[in-house]
Image (tube, rainbow, N blue to C red; front, side, top):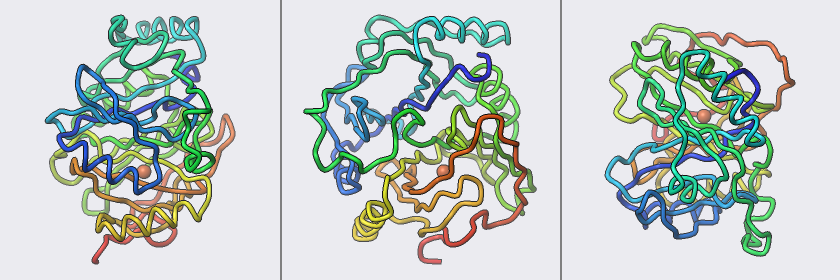
Length: 299
Ligand SMILES: [Fe+2]
């Protein structure tokens, strides 16, 4: 897919065994959770802005990511994007009518990356009637045209380069930053963007064998007070894994919480926006890649 056709990270789908526990956690974090269906199973549809969902959690045993959705403006661009990906050796398959129905989109193609994660490129998401948006949700999250946040996936050392080829060649994402280092120095990571967000996808090589395909999903609050309230809630629930801190790469102030699936959520505020054509940045190898904070909880 040629560079620049994808405009935002649209949604992330998870497969999880304990939907009630997820519902409880996400509700306490201020998200609007609705019960629905996905892939023929019970699902939680999590709304953060005007779209009908940004995170979908379907009942299943994987407790891992099930799909990642990327938005393009319309059907014409979608066809262009799929043709461009094919020229670069990445074949996307058209979605079935049932899949379009489930995702609530007008058109969609998909392909699996070298890590086994299903990526869906779509046009025409369902924009919900404002009347159905909980008043408490309005203005709480920063989403809209820049997408709701980012996903960070784990790659084994062997799959790291092929995965990056897929994201750049197949999806047309642009590398915005990278940290190369030995495992003893920290975690190699590459950050990829598709709009003004410093990254919408991150690929990380963990020091051991990755137990999950996804490390975390990041969602962003519109105001510091909303993040602070979420931090209080996560502390009360005992799910904070990494304390509040500010990242070196996207400048987000954030903390990390464990989820009932053994994956993490990163909740943040105030990430920087970058201009189109901005430089790629190389980050120093260091154990603590944050300006301040982000300590392991309990350490
Ligand atoms: Fe992150």
